[in-house]
Length: 288
Image (cartoon, rainbow, N blue to C red; front, side, top):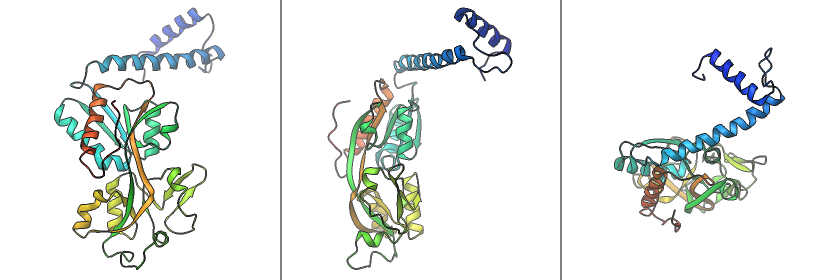
């Protein structure tokens, strides 16, 4: 796994122990001694620092031979995240792009751990993190929708309470939104008091899966109106009621003090270009 032979490892270990002046690994069990644990602890920091140094140097190579890794939540991915990657690829065909659509919670953690160049996801928890920098892109209230022929659209005086009688499909919802939902023992989903997040009855990590599930069942989903305008106009989906308490609040997230690569900046610009052409207009963005 290390790419070097066992004798070479033994020689390197012996030299390191000679420099330190202490035994670092027990030869019987090959478990680290107390001194070995200290070396391992600080060694990991050195390796990480070297990795960041190598990354900084690689950034100078620019867009043409670089790599971009983006973690994105279901909604921003469907609205502009994937389209922005396509736009960027057209302009820089030799750029390697790795898009990872996932739950917004995992996207934020990926950014915090430095496993991706950028996260494009819900900002609710990232905004309060001392380890992350954020740039808002869009806020907006969503509308419920369902399959054509669903019993709800024809129900007079439709209210949120009516929507609780059917399963909801979508990603895990941030606590800021989940705490606004009724604590009712009904099919729509439930609030997780431990993680402080709402879990719809059917959890999905892509908007496409969410839409297909709604069209094939009695499950309800939610989106910004323009996201399902085509399906509604062709009669495959039907709009229900607005849900002002269910709001999207997404943007860019990256590890604090980490230099943004030219590819990352270009991707962010592409997202903002696409967002500016969509209704409603995104939040006014400060210069990156």
